[in-house]
Length: 375
Image 1: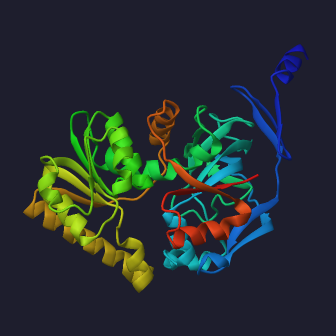
Image 2: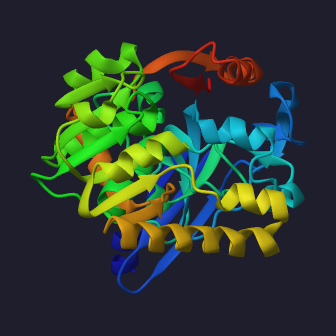
Image 3: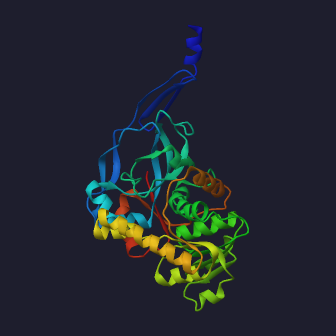
């Protein structure tokens, strides 16, 4: 009986936002009892179209947690280009049969409940993170569900709004530079389109890795990129960029991905270097021809380009996409906490004005980062 009482004292009870969690664990025994919200407010995409198709509903079901999942009480989410493109129909070959969707990939908030196997996060803890691009239930909601490895403690030095702007863009850059090109100290990196969220994140990640970084951008972003540590920041409209940029590079991340920027990047790479573009054709070809034909066609296009550039220039060619990465998110967290990685937020909207936020991005009224606040 005394042993049982001692173990009972180790029980942890946590409550947060209509949820209660009771957990006990030891080497021999583990059990959990929890009651969580079953419905919440969320922005639904019932059909593809303009910003007016987004609907804020109060009765959207919250799925049951799997053992490795975390329920997050959302405080802020960012509006990524992927969100507006998906709303307009990008990726319809994959998502149309799954409508309605909840958009949103980034999130910052507090842990409301955890699955049975979650070890690193606790109820009440402030966290931030991002979902994979193909997630069906996104973060435009009062409550979001992410896997444990898609979240990390929110940097204590920044707000929820600032934190929500970072993960998806920074993890996209991380995938290209660290997972694909495997950049190391002393190498040279070129970022084409350094003024956007992914490009600016890439510049900061490469600088933090000890690389010499150059970037092309719009004129108004030059000072910000230089302040972030870039050796060169050049107006993309300048003549003879290829002649102005210094030397040859070990890695080129092209966030623009048009024919001119691809040619620029390829010609500026050293042999053995990596060219990475965000504008891969997998989704567009699948949307055009259907999954059964489009994905094999995209694979053939990629393999052809890889063989072509390996033969003609001795370089590696990649389409790069965001993926969740616990190691990458942890480094992003540490850099953000130290003030070495940030994505400036130009404007915030309450989630009740999600349509206005999307419309402003569609019309390029707000060129910078937009974040939705969830009260």
